[in-house]
Length: 341
Image (cartoon, rainbow, N blue to C red; front, side, top):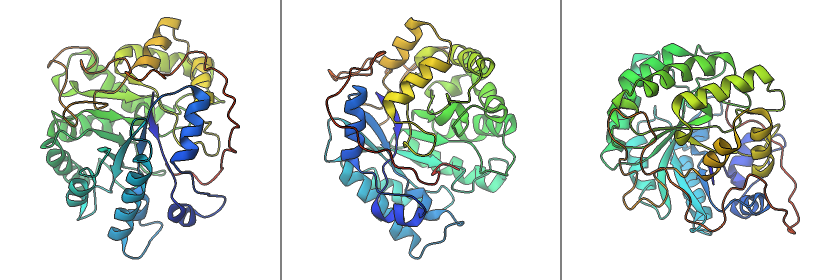
């Protein structure tokens, strides 16, 4: 299963410009079939309409429209796609939109992109607003995927992770929180990402109860330019938090980001884990997938292990260490500006 994918609506493709083209659920399903992957978490990119660097008219309505478009796409394959809404935590309508959007069919969680939203955890106002949003989300045990990396050009590292661990994460003790890109942005795993992840990994290793429902995705951390030294560092961090907390993701196949099959092959090539560890990661399924209650809390406080709901997929089609070939013709992979910077 892949826990980090995006779709691109016609409206968003137009907003991004350049070589951007729409990428819908049918295109994603085709990529999943090629990779022999049964299911995917689809993260809305509605936050892009709240990015002040790309000002739009009727921002709130555009955010709502993008979330609705994503929900409609996910609804076409409800047994294979799990949708997450998206907002900017700095918007004054954030809590209301989360409540509205997560009530839609198959929209089971929330994606937050701190970089695209202009959030700096070192800004007390920003950290406070993010904590307030986490607190509101926790009331419904809504799972959260958070892209922690600050916007390019803004400072980011261990200090940000310390603030997140101290002031933000405790506000949602009952929600599963998935840290995207091993606390970086991808592609690759630079020093600032490791500095941030190091703080979170140390807390997990120490049995810090605040990390009870914390999981991590490895989306795009392995890149063609990943060195043997960097790959070994990633492997050490994965083992530090525990393989049971690690989720595979491939992201939107744009630029240097490959589609899911190639992303899994690249991860296996660049990260020196054992065959057993790769098999475990391939089989890990986030606690919020098929949970009887949205984002139900899992795990036991203080334990250094994955939340107990992290389990093997129920679908007969699952991530393979050696993906089978498909006789389906592969669609061209679009190339457009990065959605994650």
